[in-house]
Image 1 (cartoon, rainbow, N blue to C red):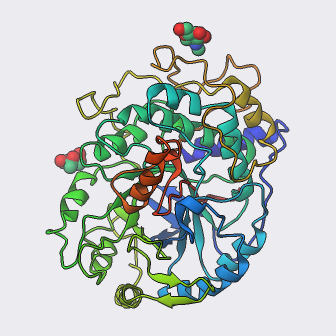
Image 2: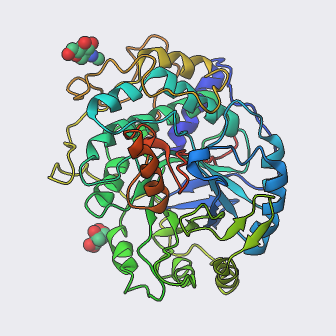
Length: 474
Ligand SMILES: *[C@@H]1O[C@H](CO)[C@@H](O)[C@H](O)[C@H]1NC(C)=O
Ligand SMILES: *[C@@H]1O[C@H](CO)[C@@H](O)[C@H](O)[C@H]1NC(C)=O
């Protein structure tokens, strides 16, 4: 897949397509890419030791990379923790992020970015709403976010969606999420001079998280397959253990999975947080299958998950679980060697069978990209709309019927006169259910009938699904 993207990107450059993604900086951190079922930087296995960061929460949806005072204050704590990745759920794609990305680079920190915002995201409340929300104006916002971040060497990856599927009953959003993943990958191949891993962050809904993982990894269209899979997991509640938490079964279940996997949120608060799971997550019990995870979350937003509390005057006070996390990381060095990762990808899995809990047939097609959005892939997305622009019911939807009976099975756009490259995929999503971030989201989105559901992330109701980039520089 990587080589194909590479080839596509090269072809795009060779044919004179002017990449919109400006190389923003060449900081000290090496670009991260995927191979087999793991991430690598400079040939070394890369483990995510990260933290969700969205001060103000999802409801506020402010871009934390624009508040330099708060960021420089918080970076001190990030360095005390020793983390190497921040996950941010919502950013303002109309702004320049050079200063913040440089500061993070200097602190040894990559960005895992959700590409959605609370208002520019898929809307999952019905098939018609989903169909309407997958439109050209939505994709323009997503692509503009890619433009704004793909050029940073310390962009790790992009999340095409977060917890869009948040119940047993809404798996019918999966083809739309997969279409967004495809479109993002296609955009990166055409417009960026590096690849960036793109994948989905799932809610840990026991009925469908595994079929989701398989679905986003399956199929003949390489561009529509994710580059990694991640899920939000709150099942390890101290005191616990590898077996008591059930994490042992989650290692077995994914042992043959074809893509890198990590926990896109973790940190149960049912017991007193001692962060015992850190020792397991970075031990040989798990490293053959998992590439680490992201603690949820930095600031206390009223749900009890915050490592620090920020006062109204902007002072930060660390909570007891912050100190416990510092000590858990100190006692758990980054594993050396390959951790048991598979260098060659496992076989692409068969798409999951349709069941009561997975309402997507293996024969199901994906919605075709909304026609007016093709020009963004060819010519670049243009200026980002910024926050506050709601795309959920605007623009032009896909020509494919909402039931996908006449969708496409591949991104082969040979009949598409102006497409410059083939393949890509991506998805976006929203959130809601099982995790704190999503549930807080869902709280707010429920009151708006789910309108904001697709982007959320953490408590506040962020929605975003950033993806970070992390790819190879050509
Ligand atoms: C993984 O693949 C190996 C070799 O093909 C097989 O023996 C094993 O049963 C598989 N494990 C799972 C959990 O599917
Ligand atoms: C799918 O069918 C609908 C009518 O049901 C039609 O309007 C639309 O153009 C078709 N789309 C494609 C891609 O064939």
